[in-house]
Image (cartoon, rainbow, N blue to C red; front, side, top):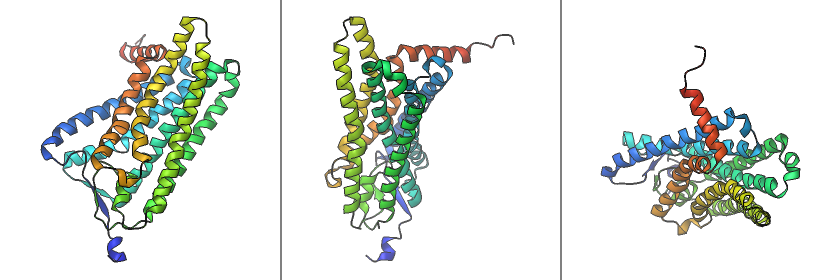
Length: 315
């Protein structure tokens, strides 16, 4: 196929979660509800933390940013999927596809980095409490957050630029509900070896570096907790870490299998199921996990509801 045909693709077709029309109303209602719960739940976490001075600590600073990243993460894929279901249109412009891929990778990697930083915060709080105010000062927290943003944007930009140089002549139908790297590489007729090396290398660093930090942090945390003589002290320490570990297992369980395997080993069905889990289900569950297992968050949420439901005094 000549170069003019290779570069003539101006839009892609997203097949979505199901190619059976009779399933679309059910999927539309289900994922609309899940998306609303995701956005509202994470927004409540941000508002509760912002409105309660007792939660203006490094742990909750990063939790608020994780909630923001989760809401944005779902928003890069789910609204477009819902619009396509409602309008019975499967198209997405070429530029819109690359933009969706860029922001999906940015907020997905940001989630990953923030989970690592939150594990480090718990390590310092439990294992080095006397140095906590120094090691996790406001300046250090801001620097850690800025570093996460810069690294994730650079990684996403790299993949976006590498994808933009490819030609697509193997059709324009993406067997997915959003523009992800692996399905796009499968459509390209260019040499994708550089993209695959970059995907594996950068993906390995983005996933394994924070995961290694999490494992090392919690190895030290568990060792320290087991030396605590009082059972109540051990229980409190474990409860503060339990929510974070639950989110870590949910996120990494699906993401590693998708991005650390070669594209040739992927199947559209399995990738879509895994993608639903870490783009929709995990961001939706995070507010419940952090609020139901955390007494401070429960108190802050109750205060937030009281402030906005009770009539103002003196009116």
